[in-house]
Image 1 (cartoon, rainbow, N blue to C red):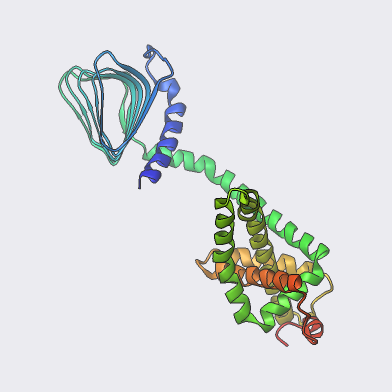
Image 2 (cartoon, rainbow, N blue to C red):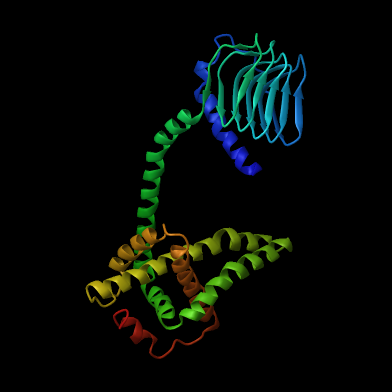
Length: 309
């Protein structure tokens, strides 16, 4: 809960930055000071100055000067205090008669009570409009990023089809012929690999290996497993729709399958389960290759048959 509130605080600080031109023409002095408090209570004493105050789940009393105040899931009381701007999220704000707010008070699910004589040079308004405007600006950026990420994933699948077609076919054959074993390998990989990496890190001398395994190798294998699952799905679709036999290098299957996997991945768990089979197949193939386990006699022939035949 606190982490979520701190994250929201970052967004609110962005709003404060965007609102800077609207602050009072005669702002308070700046000295670079900042206070961050989570829980409990905090009092800014008379004569004390703070540039930025962020409070999450705390009760704040301001008797001195604060340039910008952000309060989340707490409360704010100005008792003779002065500030340029206030942002309150789920936090009631109370101003006594001698309080001064040189700019705006922005609220989200928060009430503001002002005693007679309290000075508010700006406006008291909700953040909903500002958040919607920011969302309208960021939405196209996120959309373009998502499209770029999808294209990059398809390109990675094409690269895998070009450089490791034989290994991809072997992993597909494992999914087709040993789905139970592949699933168990995938589930084991989710637990065993991180566990071994953490153990290695704990030994200090094995820390570089553990970190490399946890940060580099494990995510890379998971991504390759995702691509393998996509190519497997693509082969299955092409076999059902056009009756195509798996090509030597599965370029078409990579495009069709990875795009399909990205779409079905929007459904909770469906994409994750499909990826788990690819992850397990890659791990199982790597393990058997490491051990030198011979392939089944019919594996190569089965891999060359149309999927589902």
